[in-house]
Amino acid sequence: LGTARCWLNGRSPGRCCNEHHDGGCWDEGHQRGDQTFAACCGTLAHWGVGIPRTRGGHAPSDLPSCAEDGYVPSPLEAGFSENALEWTANFTTMCSKLDRDVRGGWIRQVRDVEPFSDQIFSKLCRKGGPPQLLEPLAGLLRDPRLTCEGTGFLHYVDWLLVADASSLEPRARRVFFDAGGSRFADALQFFLAEYRSRGIEFDQIFVWEARPQGVELYWEGTPREIRDAVEHRLTFYDGVPVVSELGAVHNPVARANEACRSSDFCVLKLDIDRPKLEMDLVAQLLESTRQHGPLVDEFFFEHHVRGLMERYAWRGTWAVSGETPSE
Image 1 (tube, rainbow, N blue to C red):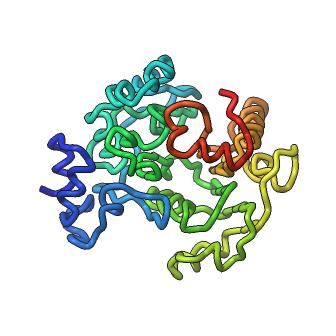
Image 2 (image 1 turned 180 degrees about the vertical axis):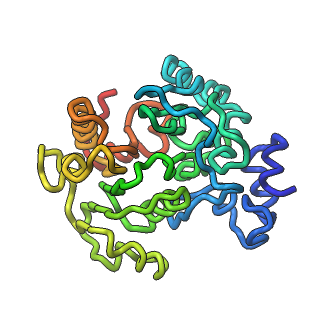
Image 3 (image 1 turned 90 degrees about the horizontal axis):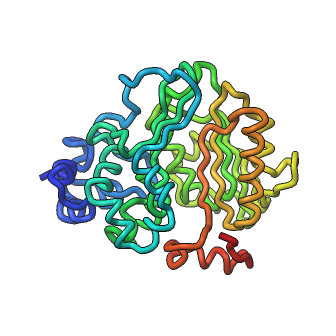
């Protein structure tokens, strides 16, 4: 059995990938036998590239255009939203809501192994445009396989469903703001490759990293051809922390408000592991959206809260930042 067929037959993703790592991966018949576990069965942000798919993984083209602006959470997301404390009280309860069919369907659909389900994926609408499908806010807001199939999925990113080119206006400028960039290969390489696989190339990229490291260390491990294709579009603020002062040049929300128009496509990734500063910036983004409409189209953010995730990483985040969670 190939990996995709194994999943479709109801076996767990982890078991399929371990037992069929030498199969045809997701692109049956292409690069047969030379893919790794991570490339075929789970994509890590570190050294990540675009997610292999069978047909392209775009949102369904037969969905009707949106009659009005709005957001429609899927039944899965609505259930977790309405029962957040109860459904995440322990791993047994949470994994019963994120059962094997849900987990497998979620990952298979991102990879385009099977059609998207509105029981899993939520919809974002802008009047007159096609609906954009989004991964649901469910579980620990991480990979749905985390804990339900083992802790090895803590840093996997192939559960994310980013926008594709159908979401863009014809002359849209495309800008990516990366607040907390670490090194290029740690996360941004995955995001740019994933967007590119869905037809979106960014015109400008801005990266902030508080720890000074130098340009060469930032690009360490990046294939030369990728660096050559990206570097001339990327502005790297080495050793420059982001701030929350309104209008400041190194406030990424202020920069997005200044650079982006409603007709553009702008993405903000916020991952600086300073919870209070992050929440200040989130509040500014929400207020800006209320006043001026959405200028940031996609926002990637890890909200550090109390709960089951504390035992994996967030407790360390609070210790390093010297902050105590309030919720």
